[in-house]
Structures are given as C-alpha cells and as structure tokens.
Image (cartoon, helix red, strand yellow):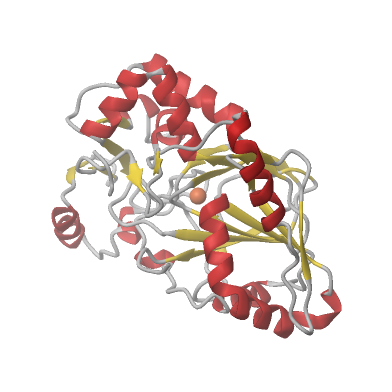
Length: 362
Ligand code: FE2
C-alpha cells in the first residue's frame, strides 16, 4: 500500500557527478537580505545523497540583528526554505538569535504554516504545551532511547513537517538521530525485496495499550482520554469507530487500540517514495508496563512480520543515521514525510521543544 524513487546511496555514479557537484555548490550560496545574512555550511558527519547534503545547515552570520530581523528573513525566504527542507530532508538553522520558547514560537510563525496542535493529535507521547504551537518534545525519562520514527505515522493523521528547538542542550548525549527514509527504502528493496513488496502491498497495522491516566514514565504514556479527547468510554469508542480502529477495554481501565491497515510506503510529489511508517519504533521501542513490542505491529492484513526483516530495516537505518548534536538556539525543520527522527539518552537537563505543521501546509 502506498500513501500516495529512489535516492542513490553514498556512492554517486561518474556520469552524475558533475551535475551533483553543481547542486552542492548551488545549495551553499549565501542567502542574504540587507540586514540579515546566512551561509550554508557543512557540519561534521553530514551525508550526501544524490548531491543533496543531509541535513542542510544554514548558519546565521549576523546574530546582532535580533529576532525580528531573523523572522523577516524567514518570511522572505519562506518558499525557498520549504523547498530546501523537502529536497534535503531537514534543515538545521544554527546561530540564529533565539533563546526561549516565545522566540521559537515567533520563528515558526514566520513560516506561515498551519499549526497542528498536540491536543488534536493521536500521538502516544506525553507533552507539555509552552505556547499554542510550541510544546516539550517528549517527557520520557532521560535514560530512555526513542527509536527512529516518522511523527505519528502510526495514526491516520500526521504532520507534514516538524520543528525542533534547543532551549538547553543536555550535559551529555541527547542527540537527535535523523534518517532519510527514501534512501532506506532503496536499500531495503535491494536487500529484502520481498519484505519491501509486502509492506507496500499490505500496509501495516499498529496496536498499543493506552493508560487510563497519563504515565510520564513511558514514551507512550498518553492516556486514552487525552488521545481521543474523550471524557468517557463511549466518546472514545465513537472516535475510534470513525477512525476505523478496533479496541478492547482492559481490567485496569486501560485501552488496547488497534489501527486499521495503514500505508507503509509514501509517494512524494517529487516522484520519490519513502518508508513512511512506524515499524522500527513500534517493533523495538513500544515497551512499558502495559505494552509488549512483539504485539505492536503486523502487516495490514494481520499476518506477522519476520523478525529478520525488521532487523535488516533497523541495520540499514543505523547505517544511514546522522546524529544531530544540539547547540543552544538551534532550530531544525524536518520534512516528516522524508526523514525519521528519534532521541538518544542523555544526562543533565535537556530542553528540546517541538512544533508540528498540519498536513495541508506546504
Ligand atoms: Fe517524534
């Protein structure tokens, strides 16, 4: 099943090299306005896929201009930045004059996207709003690793893009792993063609147990009342019925909800395809006192997935992962259809905020 190509891996064929060098050069031109200047820089460990640097890094070289000038710059460059974020999969904005949540809110607002409020999402995570469009990325304890995923790909409604903002980096660790799913799909088709074909044809189905009350000790501890914005069981059931879910109420008041078959491969406007699903996180990370990852995911027709196939997908994703080491003030714009993200464990206090963009906003 497709929700609606492939990128070459690190080795670029000779005949494409000249064109790709031109593309690289093009993306490194400074974007300048009268008051505000930026450069495109390479950062340690970044990758190149078919001539596109991943992630693209844009550095502010006039930080004294202040937040208003930065937002004016974003507003003026908006269409180009949106295009670059889709082409490259993610953009890191570094050295921009942002310090606190309200700065981040204004920076995001300058893109003029439609906000996707956390409250309206079916996200499993516990999050705390700072402003209407800005919330903490995840309240999960610092020693928990969050595996690679596309935001809310396990639900029928997901954001098209997401922003992260580093208000305070961790003392140690806390990187955000990023992985290009279009490249992953190419490699999966090479190494496990039958598995890739089954994913595409059958889709995937997800099942998880939601607690009766929020459980901040779990990465998937959001209560069913909050998830479905329901005061009681009947209201939750109405929501699930409208979404095509099946469900089971458990003795402790928790809820096992199972999605309908959801597509596992996404077609993009560019003609590329991505491995847009929650396979890696669900099969390896949906684990808490209520949830067992071995029961979290099947093909869309309910048939089991071979663990060896999952292991190969994880292996490829590890090969393709770029770890973003945060600096205070960093903002990253991630195309959620192209790039997966996660979280490394950390020590100390880490304040990473997020903001989501509605699907109809391009
Ligand atoms: Fe996430």
